[in-house]
Length: 279
View 1: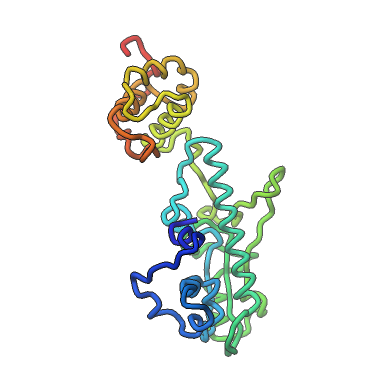
View 2: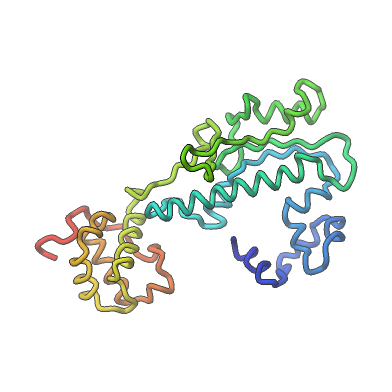
């Protein structure tokens, strides 16, 4: 979900702050009640009312929407979060394919068109489709050219290509982006690196899991708890300096209001043992 979706699910009507209705299809708006005008913001519902022939090039996993717009973690801090991100990506791809298959694939249009619409949708986790991405050996640009001028070089069914993938063996419910182009693969940072801030975040979450972090709690109590959980913290990648950073932050802040690791400055720490003789 996202704030806009959550608002709708709560039964509220979005306020048209940007006057978007003025640019939406009158035919689409006429098909919905006044409190459902937002439906025409979605291509899923607005497509039906587009009168001109269109050729859509759209990846099934839009990385910008998944990671930037909806804030899915780019660098999961542990296996649990990694699994959640994968499930979210899977859901996104399933919803994209379903939407395309119920609209442009079957030409679900309200007005006759000069010729059928086209779609090129690769199983790719990018924002936009790189030129070297192919589906069944076909590339988007030649297909668009042939479709636009109706040259007939390709059979009509080639104008509508939606790539499908086989699920992972042993995990049949999970389907990942499968296009062979390098840029299309999902390559998560497993958390065993991912930059200093990711390491600090992972350590902070582990401290929280072990019960060491309390909002405005004395840092000495946090240090003491950390000593009692050294093995677990070392496994999470904690170092002495990271633990000190996190405990000092928790002593002066309400961590449960904003605790996602981002508020901790992880720019300076070393890779010493979590507790050395000087700690």
